[in-house]
Length: 109
Image (cartoon, rainbow, N blue to C red):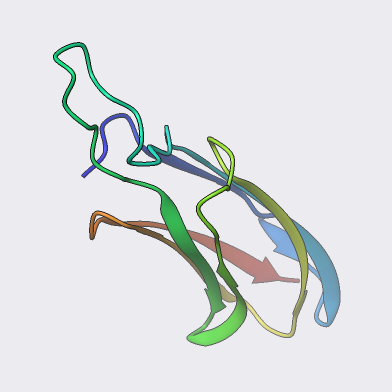
């Protein structure tokens, strides 16, 4: 697991039924390419976020495959239509096998 990884998500707390909302996500992650060397000359193992998903009440909203050239601290902004109250589940997958998760609830009304 990479050190200092912190997912951040911004989802409105409330919305109207059927409203399209904007969701913003950022994950603090150094994104090691596997090509750099440490002070002793050893290769630093590759560790990048290679996939990001967002689900609402168990239904997939977005599924992104990331390539090795992705920048440090990947940021995503996207829109989603909210038909009912529920929970957004966000997941980031790391090359090293680590999985980072965050959830946010939204209420209709």
